[in-house]
Length: 98
Image 1 (tube, rainbow, N blue to C red):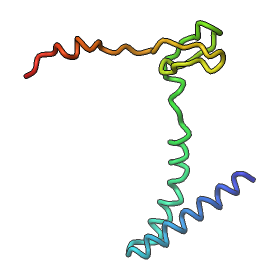
Image 2 (image 1 turned 135 degrees about the vertical axis):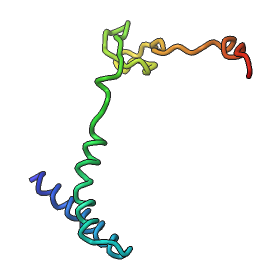
Image 3 (image 1 turned 90 degrees about the vertical axis):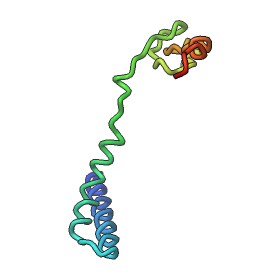
């Protein structure tokens, strides 16, 4: 049933794209094919996440795995050290200007 709903959605996208393409003076068929084929590609791009490749660490309070960019543990509320290092202001200011 879910696949049928997706097919109807893809055909509706294709029809809308084809009609708009034809109104603009282009080929209905080309825009129909493009707009029917693009939803799965766009869904794949939107749904694919890079969370598994991001570095993480453990919370010192409860042991939960948290990402480096998180400032607070969502389980126990422990404030976490940032996982990145910023340059001190003195280093930034002492750069020679060219």
